[in-house]
Image (tube, rainbow over all chains, first blue to last red):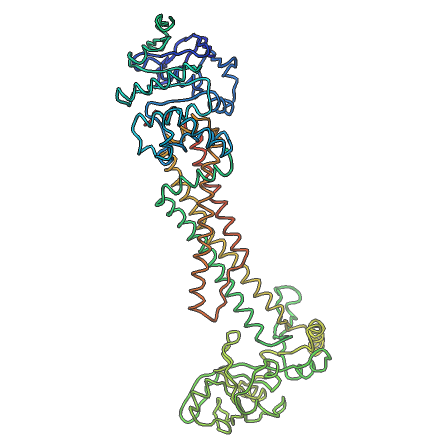
Length: 229
Length: 402
């Protein structure tokens, strides 16, 4: 699914060049559950941005589903983001003036789907995260855990193959966090490729494969024996 | 993205910030209203002046002494012409043209008139009965210089309605004596109230026989010869005849000018039409100002909505979609403001009509349409910069800059 070869990403800070990612190479097959861990500044957010096609590498190649992403135009990148990648953010990023359903509907609106189809699939996605009864609530009327569930429903409504989660439990209490983890792991067991960026070892440790980054380099690539068993 | 969804999203953002939206609508509405009010003012002035000229009479031709032409130092200037006066014989001569129905001489001057110790400076017209016919004046009482013609300095006069009120009060004026300059005239009639026609207030005038005016002002020259053609179709022929006849009488020199009412009318029509267009131009500057305001407010709104724009991009919105969203917003604001402005403009015009019923305030249709189109175009044009800025937002910065 994902193939990275000698991926580098440099930033110019003043006169200094910062190597946020330094020759990173790894593959992620379809359906894998991967956690990306490391201290802040280790390059994991930069990696997530590149994997989510919101940033381009300085050098190296990123092949997604057999397509070299460096050959894509901006509009092709946007379409790939729309059709194949779901995002879940630490601070949810719901649009406050829209209801839960309208937030979930947003990617389908951008894709130009028919309103009747949007209704059906949107409510289905909300049901999937157990919020079918709260579709008319605005984010301000929902708890943190509920907001993140709406965000997951929005990420999944286009039925992507890849879900990128950036500290999905970072703003939640333990109980809601556990609920969110349960939902995305359930999605993974249905075949979705799942990448979770976190610095919480309790969350990261649950993944079947753990990538640890230090100073922009891939430091450890561990597979969990017990989950493989 | 579907067209209706784009509209719905843009409308949603606007209704979420009613204060901001209201200010931008107000700015556009005021400038569109300004275009309407100013152009209707120009249009009212145009109609007023052209109506005035129409009220002069029908199928009118006017002969003025003097020729508008450029002269200067050259061999000819040493033997150059002097303008001959227009005379009563010229009037008699043009009457021979079959295309000219009526011709009347006019002499104008300011003279003091007095009666029984009351004195007043008035405009005096020296003329004959035909002048009244051409101008289609009606009499309140009495007759207009009866049997005077162009040969006799009969001691008669006609007064306007205001003069009658001022000098005679409630006394019957017919047959009374009035001193005009150093002459004594007997009042034969009072003109019905006419109001102002082309800057001359006839109600404040005294009319005497043309020959008496020549003696009074000690000059044979006429101020104008006013003629009426037999019909509208014979206007050109009448003008040609008048020019030929008077030129012959002036020994081949065309030292006078003949203008037709239509020519004067269309000149004023043109002047005031241009005035109206100039006013429209001035007023549309305010439309541009409103556009700049929309741009500024939208730039602020883009920076307030970075997270939302970043999210849209992460969810797969293309650059074009983001631009379309913001342009739709700008277009909404501008056209809604424009429609409001038309309402406000017509409201102000209705008030003006109440205040000045003699003027006919109507905004020309081209101004209404033009203001709307210009407002929408301004909205689009000034929406481009904020829309591009939104589209250029980096989604990563937008999403992490919480």
